Amino acid sequence: MKRWILLCLFVFLAGTAFAQDYVGDTTCGTCHANFPETGFFDNYMNSGHPWKLTYIGAETPASDLYPWTPLPPLPDTGGVPLQWDDVEYIIGNYFWKARFVGVEGYIVTGGEDDSTQFNLATQGWVPYHPGEVRQYDCGRCHTTGYDADATNDLPGIAGDWAQPGVRCEACHGPGSEHAADPSNVSTPGGIDCIGCHYRDSEYRMPWSGGFMRHHQQGEEFVHSPHGEVLSCTTCHNPHRSTVYNDGGLVDGFSCSNCHPGSESNGYYVIQDMEDLNCVDCHMPDIGKSAVASGPHSGDVAGHLFEPMTDPVLAEDNVTDIGGTLYWNQDDDGRAYITLDYACLGCHTEDDEDIDWAATNATDIHTARAAVGDAASTPALPGGFEISAVYPNPFNSSTTITFRLDKPYIAKVAVFDALGRQVATLRNGPAQAGEHKISFDGADLSSGIYFVRLTTGAGSTMAKMILLK
Image: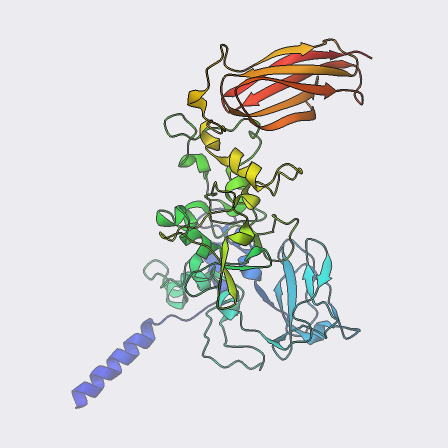
């Protein structure tokens, strides 16, 4: 019996000796200020992670507390301005929004007519559950060393934590033994990115108010083609800001590392879209954290990557499960960006609707974005061309004639002598054959202009002279 007791005591003491405690990221910064790269710790402190939750302690904070933004203003509640001695924590105030936790631990919501969330993009206030009592139960993703079962000193806070904000040990695990002997003891590891970036325990994708919920990029990622072969850190350096440091990308990263443009793999630079990046269409702002700039433009990039080519609106691509809307998945668990987000966030003309987007999106990378049956259409000699501009020179108006040897998505645009686009005459599907289109230059000054015809197979130009 005595031996058994001693053995248990040894196991307990050994476990205690090797169990690491949280030491705080200031300790981490003493060694990692410039390791593994120059400015490493400062870059991390300039990212959004440390500022998910900031301790105020009912005292006026320093005016330079945040790396990119000033202190947020304080809201009025019931017509009375909130004071700093009423504030225990600030939630956020990094790019998107700021909310406040009162000294009792409840999120400040105010009365039914109050607005207590400050949106940084608009520098304005919006309501946040006005008139409700809202417990702060966001520690799982806003803090380091969160323990949901611990009792907090403040009644409005669920659980407790070692450090507010997503600090070093939130991802790397508690580091006391590592700090004491960094060469021989590693941190035990904490959680990966997806451990926080989800909102539904079954990794479905909640949809609310016309947008994906914020902080659910992990759910989107696992239902994307990238989720099968990559990790978040394939693209992102989590120690850099995704907002202020060019996407927080790893050194040397480019989509073309995996998707080089060549005929062998079918990835082409798209005519008239050379100034766009892959992410503009494949990672549109499908999520919303604070402010949407339009019906198809939120403020959080999506991580589904693959657009569908069917003319399906986002509002028709969700399923109600128990009163909550979730983004649809196919039978293989794959989810897709609807074209109202991939295309119509930028294409806002009256004739650019979901059907237009579906027509233009089909095979857009492979120069096969055509309508009709090209195989049954007799080829015209010369492929595609601008065959005439008449009259030329012209006074105010002229007619441009162009020919296509097969169906294309055809764009006809006019540029001045400095290369500035002054008119788009056509941009959409066109059948094989001859087409005529009028150009009115009544509002332009005399001079040399160029008309450019662009198809999925290339482009051609013709010079025009406007004389008044």
